[in-house]
Image 1 (cartoon, one colour):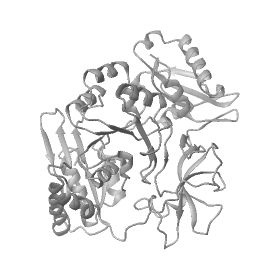
Image 2: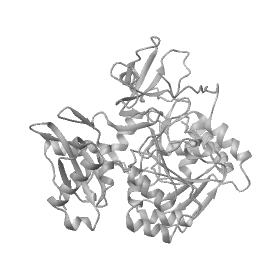
Image 3: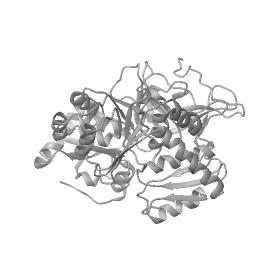
Image 4: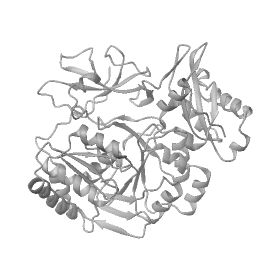
Length: 484
């Protein structure tokens, strides 16, 4: 069986991001090179900061942490701040002196902060007055002089990936300290006013950016310098990719990774994009799809997404975390023995399911606990949601299982309609959407139940991911109903 991770990558014997990346670009960045272009929420104040600035500031802060606060290598620091340049200076300083930084979102309440303090064992807590891995450069296609805007709170792994990946390439971060709810119009206005070359956004943002009103706004106020777009956080519907390309002329490169891993799969430069696919494994990353016995599946067969790991002491494998702070043995619980290989060979299970086609592209099916088993048919919610998104009346949807006396469970879709379509929401539109799904996907996957809801009804994480688990709990335990 062909493998898609034959490239051999070796860990350097020593590496420090602050020294080997930030200090390097402080000396070698192009003249007027920008590490960060920061603007305030109202866009009336902005700062352009160099790598030399972050190198100098992080040296000073590292001395403060070590000599004045007594922090040593391995100590934990809880960092809760809004999108201010100081956040990146502090994070660089922790890397410089070997302190483990534990970033968290500013939206945490008191009990959440207390939990993180206790759980992490943080010796120092840095916050503002209110709240008190490296990613391969080919995914972002960044180079010195570029400016990347990543729509992610610092408390999420995506923000850390962007921090390391952007500066690894000598490119700059664009930071908009906007604390208001996401606005697609404001996002387009910012892209129009500033020389942002790379945009990384969650699917929720792209879905709003391709609505008819926003597409008209895009034409009136096109981006200043945008040339590359990536998606992250959850799977991106093919229809959204099509509409964005139709509007902007740019394809969205989707990728896949977790807090516990690096970017392990993506649509990299040099491989044609297949809309709806996660892409191919990152070079050197032993990613595959396996069955319950630890064997790699055949082409197009559904299975568990897994990374091969070598647990021997001499292992040079990478891409998977060592475990959660304060929880010994957590990695072991996520492993499945490999069917071939030595005693130290195992598979790390991501908890997601996918299939891999004959050309090596991975296609997301769903979280293990999201997959619906209806009358013996296994149905991934993402494919149903993607089919619904193709219908002009649908803004977005969330698909979960719903109890059924005959089939055990059936597919149910919570659907957000366009403003125009919501005026005629009724049984006729339900049947129209069901027939549309039967025609554009396998007939057994159509949603037997459809509920029209307001946008605010769909529970989402801070980063915009739909929380299907909460919808499923409502459906199975009985919960609030919402109709337009």
